[in-house]
Amino acid sequence: MPDPALNGMVLVHPAYWRALELQADEAAEGFANDIRDEYQYDGTPRLVSDIRLKRLGALVTDLGEISPGRAGATEFEDWVARALRILFSYSLEDIQARSAPDTVDRRDIVAFNAANSTFWKMLKNDWGCRQVVFELKNYSELKPADFRQAAAYGGGEYGRLTFIVFRSDRDHLVKKERKRVAQMYLTSGHLNVLIPTLFIRKFLERTYARKRDDYVERSMKKWFNTVVRRYAQIQS
Image: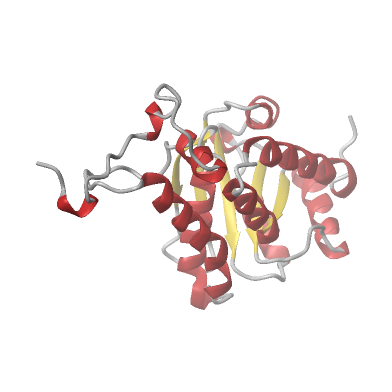
């Protein structure tokens, strides 16, 4: 029986839009093409694209409502996990939070590297990252211990690289951050790639505007090359 709440409206799953030559606004169609992610259909009739856009728009602004430091550590972990599931849904699978029970300062996210793009394939083949670790720091001033902690994840399935996601509106690393990245690589052979939250917010904003895949991939490659060549000063 038709749902009276729909007022006679017919909902067509986005997978059939092109086959039926249906038209949609650019943003909605973009997200329809990316229907696979954490937002699963639960049997309730709804306008899928509208819901996805609203949730993404909220995610972009949610970060500003999360308190820095220990007070907002759990919320920050959830925010990063949701962002990663949207931004890298085609190359990273089984994205899960893995918080250490003995300390609130040690929070990370681990994902299986399906290596379905050039960048993630390079991390798997050249750096041994079959499992990718994102160490989370809900503050802007990174300590020397943070770099050592991230490097401790290295080896085996986790390879020789760890991402450190931290609260920052900068698009570059300051001198002491560059120095610690270089020192850690020179002493242990492990590369810590710092990801300011500014980058994730920009990626999400581009996703909202249906400009995600190419921009995010190119940006990750460019930032990685900057870290390797300028900050870690790795020679070929």
